[in-house]
Image 1 (cartoon, rainbow, N blue to C red):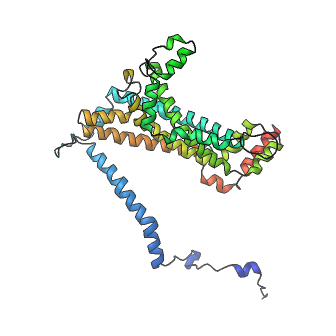
Image 2 (image 1 turned 60 degrees about the horizontal axis):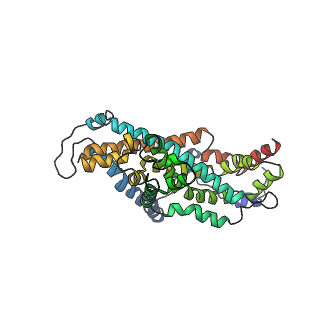
Length: 353
């Protein structure tokens, strides 16, 4: 029988308690462990159940009634409200409108925000250390300023700017010689009402996400960009191959938040076109819900619309996670590879190309 000489490695190892069959033995529930779980798991879970799950369950119940909102009397109607909803042409038009907002607003906003963030953090001189443009702090503040202004104020300001008779936009265009915009109603024409609303939402939100991406890009190791610069990779190639993979989680989170904001968009749209626009071209589900509840006093029917909007929002978030997972994102992928290895390979490929 050979003598075993202990080494520093074997001496530093602590034996793990094991039960029969080689499985690790369960830890005992001590007072410290119980209080820890109650404080950091039980309390948040209780808050979530009380303020999220229970109200959502109540909403599903009221969606199956004909409750009028200001009286205790109601009748249970089952799924009649949902059947009526999907036979309502106005609601279906509002559903199509929010689908357009959920597609275009996040895509355009994040593209512009990423461009601003890359220009501010990485758009400096092509020689020497990688750094942003001169006066980056000033541009960061200017881009963030629209987000500081409340959404209702932004909507009201732009409603005045879009005014066909005294609006600043028509005045500028007319001053440039475009006389056909003298009394052009940007929010009164079906072809321009929705793009005008989208522009205002994007203008109000792009600064916040630019600052978010700036913070994320500053967390990327500078060595990756320096290696890409040495290999001759262009700025576009560096952005696509290094920056985007490195801040992928931030982009996913931002896309979900923006999609939720676009699916609602009540404040912006209500401030500019409270009547839903020409032929309901800018009507959103939240506007339709508000009008049905408070103008027609059909709170049961309006609650059913709210349930559908919540389901649509959950489906949107699930689709974003699914697309991210199918395209190689997720925590599992990052655990398999060393941090920055994928970006280093991409930088090398960009330089070789």
